[in-house]
Length: 439
Image (cartoon, rainbow, N blue to C red):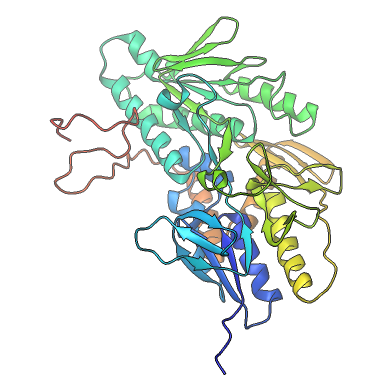
């Protein structure tokens, strides 16, 4: 008698949700099940700390963790999934001549990507902050702008080169604006040709206060504190157009700055457009137990899924906090269904929100407790230190943070070039220089 192939669960997406699903399934599924995890990268990125990379508070390698070190039974494949064949239950890979991957149960945890198409000129002139490469590119651009300002003869050009505009007053925008301001204040001392008063950060937000996800009082405090630190805040303002010298605002007005950072706008990854499943605004609509309607063997979690939260009757926000809880429930429900037991709906009450606002200050709202200033900053660092994947990276980040408090920031421009190659991978304008240019 021929041996029956092992039943396979395939997880598409190697972010926090996908890795969490795999780790939970390792404990819940019987040993004869095969668990596959597929991702374009062989690491996960801890996005809440990308702003820290921009401000040189921690090293780039400390916000990523290898997936293979985070799973045990799971087989990991670094591949690009091009299409999902629902009829044949196969994953079609983008690599030439790659064999399709068969699955019996499928979990989609694809996440989202940055969307710079919402504002004219943003795709050409703005720097997103979604990936580790974005954080490295922005950090290098800051240093290149300082170097350019140090040698440019025109004071007006020097002023524009050292002005930075952040679009979006949510968590990412507030944190990167605070880190940017702190980094500029420390780094400018090594550029005597640059006027420190000209190094400015402007933050543009369409609402009447920052951080609308937390209480009004903390949002107002964040705005006042950041203004006191020298950040120029524009509330109730919308960006109409982005160009190489700054942004134009809807209704008139302009904010100058040679570097624009975009923290608004996300869109589904390309695979979602090719998955024939019910979607709303690009997100897969799930049943209460996170399975997909009419497809009981397919589940969706994280940013790519539209999951109603039974706790408050609202769609779950696209945050890691919710994605990790969804991942645990998917693993439990998948195991329950295989055992013939009833699945459970998703319901979760947020523990709270935290945001660093620069200059060793933060705002925090945890289990109804509201903190601000230095105590909130300590809580912010402690919370994220516990959440960082793997013990090795927790230790590294802990020592890196303490080192950074005692010594000046690292102002090395990380130019990644190969011998014999004159191209700059991370140019200040995001484009490679002319071929005749020597580095």
